[in-house]
Image 1 (cartoon, rainbow, N blue to C red):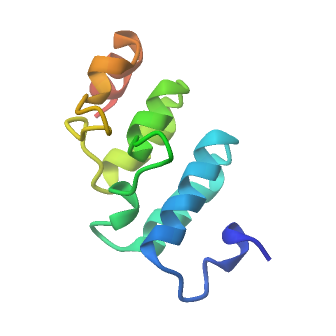
Image 2 (cartoon, rainbow, N blue to C red; image 1 turned 120 degrees about the vertical axis):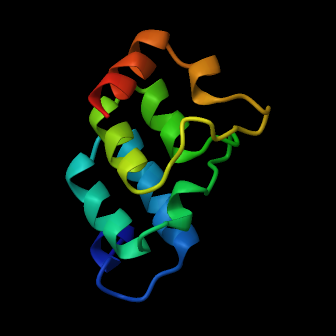
Length: 105
């Protein structure tokens, strides 16, 4: 069983974070709420970084996954979060995508 099949077991926030990046990358949006629910009210999963130093919100926005970005924001991700280079999502992502997220809030 992979990460997504282990949500009922005790797993760490870093494992949830890795699974979250997999779900974002492969557009497994149906799994994201369950992962974030599992992580708790202020999930550390929203704070993890991928190999490029991006938080999950940056990755979702860079791939144009507005619904996923909304889910992440609901669970504590912030548009002001910085990547490894010290940039916010609105500094590295298409402004129209960021606006879609802002207007849906």
